[in-house]
Length: 215
Image (cartoon, rainbow, N blue to C red; front, side, top):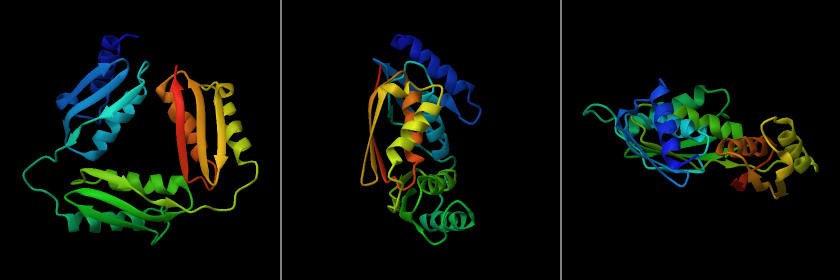
């Protein structure tokens, strides 16, 4: 696919997504690298726009430059954002109690703390990203290394093989001290996300180094 076709597909996909106000989003494509610019009213719309683009065939990478501009002149105070975020994290059963703390500066939220699983870290990010007044979220929650089975690499490789959309034979997996490194070639940007999810699903994984190349 050429850049013009990719750009049109991206614009159509953004317009089709009902949870996004795409009127103020700009799209540029250079050799399969999509640059998103402009502004949206919420941080969650910014994240959704990025997820929509990752599903487009031919996309090799994304430069995310969308600015979050809350609607109206009233800006939610940082202490109010922090208080709401702390309450939401407490009420969410996927987030371990008293393990995640919130810092807020000018609408930019930082999540700190320690959890045991990546899904718990993602749950905390998801809870906060949907709040009004939030402009960005920096998720620096640490995943505490837990004792894991000696065949953790085999578990990840088996997960890749179970996914019908992946050519698992083209992906090499290395595991060391809770860090997974993925190498090889894949067919699309969406395949990269599938491979990353498979790696993160293993217990005790603290980091995933994605060195996969889109063919």
